[in-house]
Image (cartoon, rainbow, N blue to C red; front, side):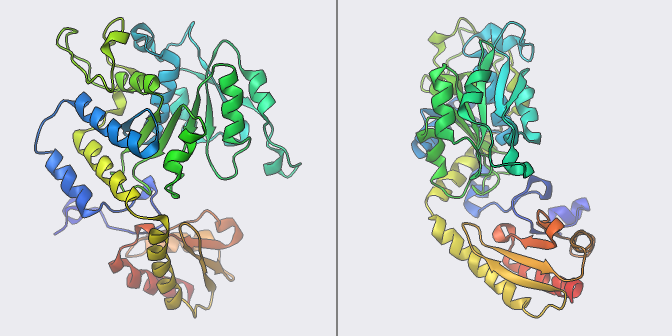
Length: 391
């Protein structure tokens, strides 16, 4: 009996992709083995994060990095670092930001539910720009001068949500913010692949970049990476670690935390709720090393073979047309004929086995099959179930 069976939790077929709601994907044997080994010994957590920092810095080109409990935690820690700096008294006050820099600038078209993590540090978000290109009223979005005009003595940071369509460009935002002495935080949670993005945002001058560890990287689902400027990473980790220790006894690794730059030891910080265990740190580091050891094209070819196999099995559906959509992550599109896409999603979800597909284009009558979280044993079951539902 599997662990899920013993708990009475049904296993699903995840054709949606590495979404947290459906528990992400699978861990490679090397990752699970490393996590199990990590759980059988005790270490100093600051030393372990310092070791992770060396790996992350080497791969991303950043000055330093830490493992977080997800990309959203990275945004909270980033914002807290930009507000508090290396002042223990400021760290102790958060989320009370009275008298501190307590505003963060965001382009209105980049706002999303995850900015709750930013606001959780005690800041207010100042929106700029009107996204006419999305509303259909025009072609414009926010422009650099609007960011510049919004910067005041209360501005702690500019938060930039990276997508291929984000405007203004990150180069323009960095140039504008840095000219006014303001750091730039990049939310790059889902911007892998391509693997080159691990270095891309840092190379363009971003001060802090947050990635998800449980999506394309193949790390533990509750993990992430925060990389960037050493002083800001130092502030972030200080607001995350267990610091219940006497000052004289506290000997953090100098490569991550320079004790001599602090007036004293801060209390447990606002990021203490984002605790990361030793197993997660080790698992993420191993997953990151595995990820950069394989090319994007090698991954694409594996996923493409899966999608093409599914397409072959669904070539004669009566109420849908299956087509392969190639790309960094190849997908299978199911264009429905005479069926309501959301009703089909529910049929798949409520059947046995339960199947989760990507409904992001359901309003256009299209369902997507993402191969990244499909096991070999899932494929025939998925084809059979889709044939039942779609004729």
